[in-house]
Length: 199
Length: 199
DNA sequence: GTCTATACGTCGATAGAC
DNA sequence: GTCTATCGACGTATAGAC
Image 1 (tube, rainbow over the protein chains, first blue to last red):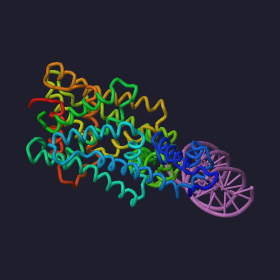
Image 2: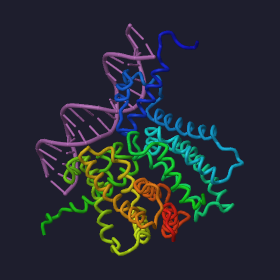
Image 3: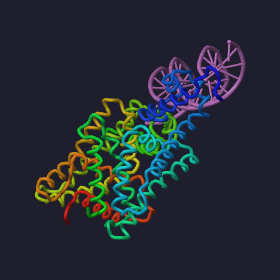
Image 4: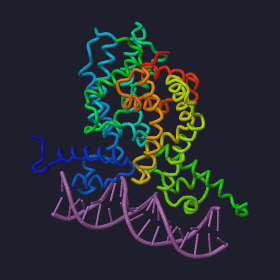
């Protein structure tokens, strides 16, 4: 119920998000026109405005959804508080890779199109990003406190590890030399070593 | 000689490159118009075409210059072949940070605007980038061979280390908590640990 | 819900005066 | 070397028919 007879609005809305994600990732927000998106969806340009107030809102919706998905996915799989910092760090690394690797387009635009957000929208995304960074920073701080990690600066280590992990999306290809599982082990080793963790 | 009387073309050419770099970094290639750039330079839009064939050539020129500067700067300070892998890695890390940190805008557009290059221009930049990556990869491979480093995969370690180092540009501010020298030491420690180097 | 038609602005690039 | 003027195309977004 509550569905209008003969309409397929939900399907169109989904197609719109998918087409926008793909096109923004490939060509950039500013370089993609509403006409292009409409062509991909299979409707006329004017029809898109039934699903988004404007182009900016469309972009923000994609980024906001991505960040919410990320934080909710973490909450849904967060390890109990009883585990050691090393276990927590391993959990975080594996989570980060498994979440980000299959979402290349979303991750890409979430980093590349930040500057195309209005200041208000930018702040919302930045807040979510800081929340995510704080997860890793808390783990590193705890490990630093009980001397399982040896870090000069936990704040910079947080940035460095996230940059290292996310950089994976720039080179990883499904058909490539390495499977997802192998990539996970390799990065896990790099992160543990960088943190100075004894394993 | 060879300078036309009364002209200030060289100064304008330089201003054009600087304005384009700043604006592309801040707003993105696709979002910046030739009229905006002209306004920044202090000339009319038409006058820009005395200095660049078109907008694409302008972008490519900036990226190509940046990559050439990078590779030439490395050659100019390359350590003699006699040093150990650890010394070489330290040299590379310090070089990378000192080169990239003061060039935030150039580095930013060199990563963000790759997709706005024509395929031919993209290939030129990619080749230069692979040349730079090979420098680090050679160092890691040598250290792996003589067992000063302990890496699961030198190719991925290369990507990971460069991503980690370059990520610094997203958070570093001159007025921030840490000086360039301190950042250098912190990242050096992270890289050495990640490589499994005994120091 | 989707269409056509269109308002209205800006774009990259060029022509020709000075 | 720089200007003004302009071309033709394309941009976002809206109005109103169906």
